[in-house]
Length: 261
Image 1: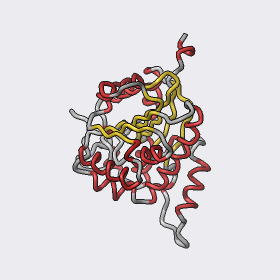
Image 2: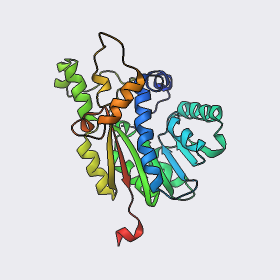
Image 3: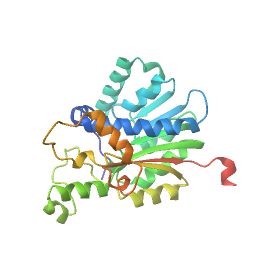
Image 4: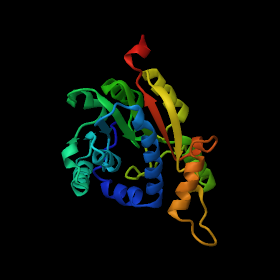
């Protein structure tokens, strides 16, 4: 079994994820979490790894703030699009692009990084614990991981609300392989356990799209994206809503050397 390469799905990602309301909600909550995280990292330009970075939407925004980015991805097509996006945003000088897996990235970095972005990748890899260990190793002591993963509980709830009981009876196994539905939806408790086993300290969590995917089409005036994001922000860090998000974002820290003594 191999980790997923998205050469054949790059266009679908561009249209069906980033160019939609759900993509706007996802980006808004991710930026909220990063804006909360960044002040706790060293001052000055940070060195950031975007592992499995895809189209580089978030990392190009960080590059625009002056940070130095290494974006890696298995997909040559995703990297081509990420480089094109960086040129369009005028941030190419602050970004490097490498066609390697997240597991290999430690062999291609000159020094440890301050921040790792690992967004919507964990649900596609065969051996998630090994990937998280590899990312832990490339972080500076005191560095942070911004992890977003596809939530098994959110998928289960969505499947129930659609009445797709046959899919549940089949343990939600995919019939088609060339889809945007992740191969390995993750149980949050498993993910938290893997992070702690690596040595990470979990600092904060947020659900992403805790209600939007379950909304019925309104009978009256359609809700604006701004209204939806406002309500997502209100509930995304509260239980039980957090644990029912389609994705969950986790901020995790590699302890500083003195903390390990």
